[in-house]
Image (cartoon, rainbow, N blue to C red; front, top):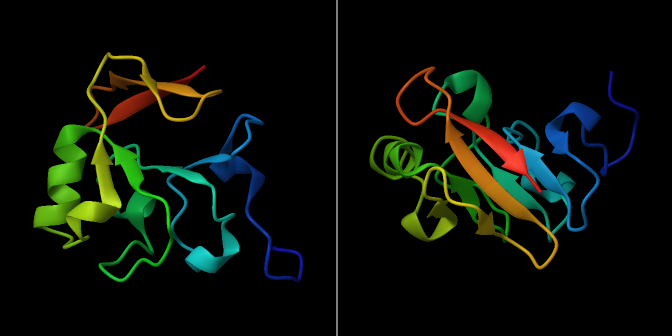
Length: 118
């Protein structure tokens, strides 16, 4: 159970201890519960991972994901394109001065990735 208060975010959703924080597949709660500088990552397009993500998802950060998942989010789920940022596979991509993400093909479903954070 979540402790009371508006700032609770499950520890399992946070990747590492970077600042700003990186959250993976965490869209179930109101976006107001996430830090405004959070880095948001979607590993793949399955409902148990994007649950809570709607066309009206209201958070200042873009959702980082694979190109295939980005297309699914914008074309099927109708998330506005400006809210989604595709990251190329197998290319170390700096997302902040202190955080680099590499998305690696997960061979689970189209667009699914393993996320390497350095």
